[in-house]
Length: 129
Image 1: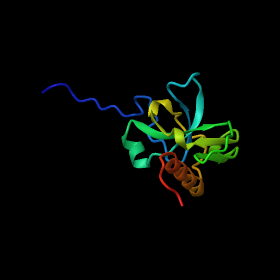
Image 2: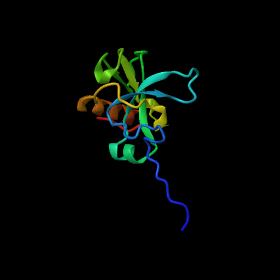
Image 3: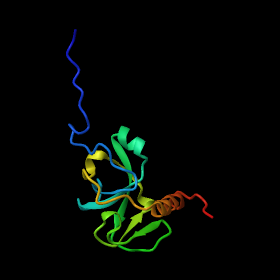
Image 4: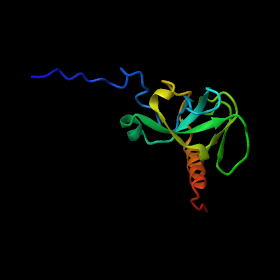
């Protein structure tokens, strides 16, 4: 007969089960010089976010340097506390357990998400009109 199968949910494992595309979360990025939390935007699609153990994110910075791959966020946008930029050239994959359980606020507008998509495309060298 064997042992009964025990099914563990992501909630049992202490992992954020469903981060949402377009929302900002507090994250810890491994390998940064100092361990600190920073806001990051989830850009992977929701279906992937439900099924995978990791998500694609773009980190935010309060150093407001202008660059073709940066998207400016004003304080309060998506729950962010200070004026910031999303650094689209630093898109990365993080395990869900490095994200806060809840988003900082609501999702970014469609217009801002399209700016982020253009920033990512510029970062990987796709020609833009």
